[in-house]
Image (cartoon, rainbow, N blue to C red; front, side, top):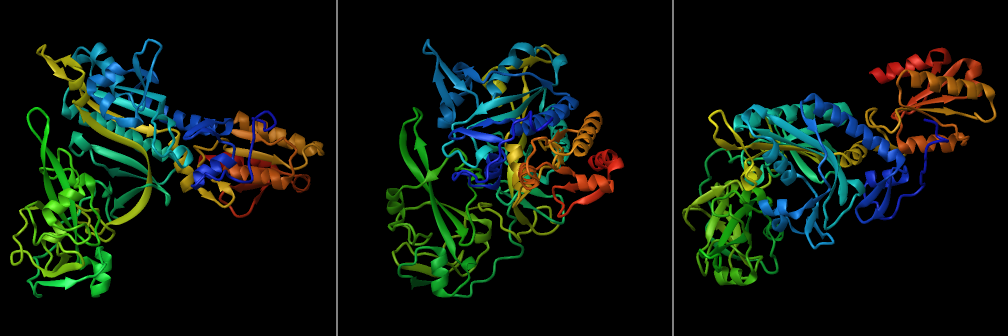
Amino acid sequence: MKASRFFVSTLKEAPADAEVASHRLMMRAGMIKKLGTGIYTYMPMGLRVIRKVEAIVREEMNRAGAVELTMPVVQPAEFWQETGRFDKMGPELLRIKDRHDRDFVVQPTSEEVVTDIARQEIRSYKQLPKNFYQIQTKFRDERRPRFGLMRGREFIMKDAYSFDRDLDAAKASYQVMADAYRRIFDRFGLRYRAVAADSGAIGGDLSEEFQVIAATGEDAIVYCPDSNYAANMEKAEALPPAGPRPAAAKALDKTPTPGKSTCADVAELLGVPLSTTVKSLVLATDIADEAGNLKGSQVWLLLLRGDHDMNEIKVSKVAGLDKGFRFATLAEIDEHFGCKPGYLGPLNLKKPVKLVADREVAVMADWITGANEIDFHMTGVNWGRDLPEPELVADLRNVVAGDASPDGKGVLAIERGIEVGHVFVLGTKYSKDMNATYLDEGGKPQFLEMGCYGIGITRLPAAAIEQNHDERGIIWPDALAPFTVVVCPIGMDRSPEVKVAAEALYEQLLAAGVDVLLDDRGERPGAMFADWELIGVPHRVVISDRGLKEGQLEYQHRRDTAATKVPAAGIAEFITGKLAK
C-alpha cells in the first residue's frame, strides 16, 4: 500500500474522555472514531489490525476442526424466552420490537441460536462431535461503557460452541479448544496467562480465562512464580493456615473505641496489627413458601480477618447461600444485632444468626470484633471460651500476595490482566432448556453436552496496546501491526534517486509477501517519523540522498533507541530476515 492512496489521519492530542493508553492511542493514531457512547467506527488503519486478528483466529479454529458459520445479530426473542434469559439477563440485553410488535434482541452472544441449529440438524451420535464458530458483531448495553474498545457496547467476538455425546467427549473438545487458544495467543506475540476461572452455576473445573498481562487490566490474576499454578481472583483458593490455633492469652474485654467504626481505625487506635481484627459482614437469604411468596428472611454473619476482602463467588458456594443472597437491610441488622454497622460482632446478639467463619478467623485467638454497641469493640475474643466453635468454616476471602500456593510449590503473586478469551464447558444447560437431543446407539434420545469458547476480537488490539506502548505511541507485535514495514523516503518528491530506490524496495518487499507501506506523501522527516511511531509500525526503513551516496539505508525497529545502517544492496534480505525471527 502507498500512503497517498491510503487514509492516514493522526492527532496530536487525544480526546478528553480517553482514560487509558489504548483508547488515547487508537484515537490519536486514527484507528477508531467515536460515533456514540461505547460505539466506534473502525477506521481503515484500525480495521487492518482487526482483520489480522480475525485471520489468525480463523486459521487456528479451522485447524482445530471447528466449522465456521454466521448467526444473525438480531434474533427472535422466543429462543431467549425458552432459556429464560430474555427476562433474566437484565438491561445489558438490548430488546427491540419490529413493526408487527414482535420481540427481538440484539445478540450479545448466541447460545440459543446455535442450540436451535443443533436440535434441528444433529440427529445421531454419528454426527458428533461438532464445533460451530462465528466471528460476528455483538452488542451489550453496558451501564458504564469506557476505555474505548476495552469495554464498548458494540464489539466483535469470535464465539464457538461444541456439541458432544457425553461429558468425557465434551472434555476432549474443551482441551482441543484450550490448545488452539494457546496457539492463537502465542501467534499474537503477547505476554498472557491462561488462568483457571470459576464456572459459575455450571460447576466443575473446566473453565479458563486467557488474560493479557497489563498494569491497567481490570482483573487480578493470581499465580505462583515457582509453578504453573494460575487462577483469577474469583477462583484462587486461600488454603487453611498451617498449625493449630494458639491458646487464649488475653481476657475478654469491652473496650471503648469512640468514633472508630472500621477495622483499620480500631487497629490504629489500639496500636495492634490489622490482622488481629475481625470484620462482620451481614447477609440475608429470603425464604418463600411453595407458591413463591416471601414469608421471611434468614440473616447470616460472615467473619473475615480485618485485612481480608470477601470473595462473592466463594460465598455463593456456601451451603445455604448458594441459592442467592443479598446484604441485610438496616432493619434486619438492628433486629438481630441491636446496633448500626461499624460495631457489629458475634457476641451479645439480640436474635440468633447463621454464622460462617473464614478459615483464617477459625484459627485466630485473642481477636477483636464489634461489641454490638456504638463506640465499643470486644478485645481478647476466643473461640470455645467466649462463643461456641463455628459450625460452618469456609474459604470466604480473596487471596493476597504471599499466601501459600494451593499446589504447595511456593507462594502466590498477583498481577493485573485483561481478559481476551474464555473457554468453558456448558454441560446440558442449554440443550435441556431447548430440548436439543441426539439418538445414541440404542436409539434413545440424549441431551447434547455443550462447550463455549470466546475471543474478544476488537478488545484484543486494545489489550495489546496496553501491553506495548511508550511515550511516542503504539508498539505493535509483527502479527498485529496494520503494516509490518514502512518505507520512509526523505525528499522523494525532490530526488529521483530516492524515489527509484524507495519504489524498488517497496516492490521487492511486496514480491516477498511483506505487508509493507510506502510513505509517498512528501511529509517532512520529523512529521513522517512521528506518524509511524504513533501508529506503531514495527519495522522502518529510511532512504535518503546521503545514505544512497554512502550505499547505505537506515533500519530501525520500533523498540530500538537508534537506527542501524544497512547496506542498500541487501536491505530486502535484511528485512525479511528480521521478519523471520
